[in-house]
Length: 311
Image (tube, rainbow, N blue to C red):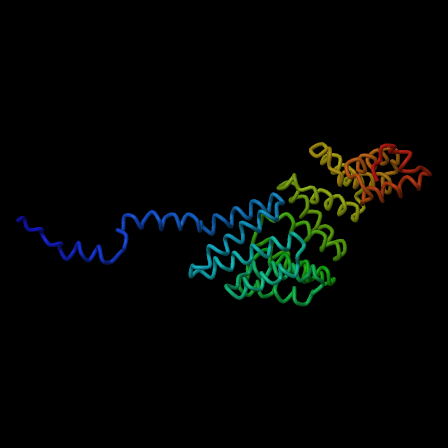
């Protein structure tokens, strides 16, 4: 009778363990990893959806990011996920929820951007003192952060402290020379310092429109600075030149209409620019108000001048 060879200890232990061989477990782990996803990729997806205006899809992607990062020992990424969810709620107008997530981000991993976001939100909620505190906290973490300096400057401007406004705007521009919004606000703040400030604002804005010809507000602020300096012809010439590159910008037409009607004694052409401004901005906005005032001064009505006007 043939004798069977007894099973080896190695094969017996494998049978009794009941475990799958490593080769069969690896694909399962890979599948679990794919299902969880890369949290940073999900964060980028959320940002793309947010920029497209789809807050619902953005929130779904951001919540997936939060879930994916929960098992990681990365408080910085976890804080980023909370910040992103808060930003989405803020854009959707859910300020209380936004505040909650911003504060959670600060608890997990304090950053300058989290303080700035929370400060800006609190300012919108009329909690001005708290907002200022967070802008200052951002600067403690990053003393050269341009956004922190800019927001703190705007806080001082809203409280008519123009000296500190100028200081922080200059710091913002030093930290980020290519910062046209800060340059525009600096020029406006310099209006408060007499003719010397106006001349500084003029030179500042001349450089700004050369560097950023696409920045419409820079053109408008330069023109208004020239008006304050009583250089009406130069202001008119600059706006005409800007309109050659931006013929369909409502702000340029409106500003030129105001200058032509008030300072250049050219009501006929001013009326054409007011008309164009209203056509470019349907609704009872700024262009409508200025146009209505101009036409009433000349005993005309906006309805008769622009029959197809949409209120």
